[in-house]
Structure formats: C-alpha cells, structure tokens
Length: 280
Image: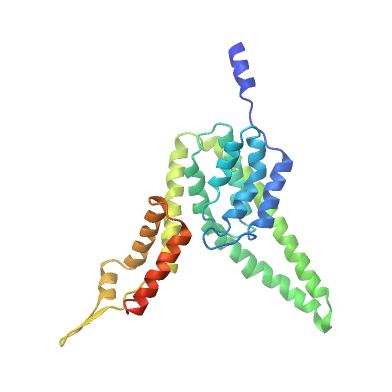
C-alpha cells in the first residue's frame, strides 16, 4: 500500500490550466493564417498554438517542449475557424500523451491529415457558402444611401462568428478527445491509427489527382498512324506521372533529407527544360 501511494505521488497527473487552454485556441485563431507559406501553410500557426500547452505539460523539461512543437511543424491546412475542432482533439491527445498514454507521433499526425480535408470542406460550405452571403446581404441593405452601418455590421458580425466558432469547436474537440480516449486506449487504438492512416493516404491521393498535372506531348508519327504516349500511359494507369512525381518528392524529402524549397526548385527547372524541348 505504501509503495503504491509513493508511486502515485512521484508520478502525479500532468494538468493543464484553463488559462493555457484559452491561450491555445486564441493563438490558433490569431496566427492560423499569420505565417502562411506553400511549404507548410497553417502548420506554423498550429505549432504556435501548442506552445502554451507544452509549457504547462513539460514545465521542467524544455527538450520535450521543443520536441512537441516540432511535432506540429509538418504541412497542415484546413478551415481556419472550424479547424479549432482538430486543434482541440490534438490538444487532448497531447495531454494524454504527456500522462503516459500510448499515443505515437504518427497517430497524432495521421489524425490531423485525416481530418483536415473533411473539416475544410464543411467549413467552406458553412462560412463561404452560407454564413457570409447571409451576413453580407444584410450589410448591403444597411448600407443603402451610403450609411456606414453596413460595413460596421459586416465586420463585427463576421469577427464574432469566427471567434465563437473557433472557441466552441476547440472545446468540443477537447471534450471529444478526452471522452474518446477513455474507451479507445487499448486494442481499438491500433485500429483507429490504421483507419486514420488510410484516410490520410486517401486524402493525399485525391489531392494529388486533382492538383498535380504532368502530361507528355510526345508523339510518334508514321505513314500509317500517330502514337500518343500520354494516351498509352493513361490507358495503363491514369495519372501515373503525377503519382510518380509525388512519390519521388516523398522519397527525396524523407529518405534523402532534401528540403522542400530545393525540391520545388528542382521541379521548376525540370519542368522548364521539358517545356522548352517540347516534352510537356
């Protein structure tokens, strides 16, 4: 009994204050689009939002604070305000991880990648296609005759909606994460991790097919017919060249430690030369 008591006292549960949680969602709200580049998009804002959390979870271990922030510097892009849901779930996972739960870095990354696409789609539909048109239609009516009320109404209403949705979804995600891990820790965690990995790969595959284009213009003409090499490749495997480019980029980034900037420059040079000589 004394031994168990000593063990509990020497390994107290790491707690996070309400102040730190408020700083987390508020930092995400302020900086999710503040440091925005094509290499990482919203990742710097996400990493910054985790800093208040890590400062309390690892008060006496600066190295773990650094490792935690680095964990969230990989590419991330979702709806900036509904994305508070992901921020909250990840915050809950980080709290559980700090308290000894068997949660790997890959699990956290797979969940982020798996959720960012669906959340972005829902957020765009909710804000751009629904809330913003309603707000601005009312603002136009208030602006009749040159009144500034329309502009004031639009700015204040949009800001309030963004603030409310970010805070609400963050705490819902935090609550959802804490409740889910009570039942998921164990055998179900492996299944969940596999499912999130599959979902993440599916999302990345869809993004590749939609946004990566690399078509050959090479043809072979004879007296009898003309052979289009791109059509032959599409008949074997549609979009096989874009997939090969993505896999090559992944290999160079992960295995050869080439930076994303250098990889982009290499692709630009290769495409420029290929266009000049008429290959693409």
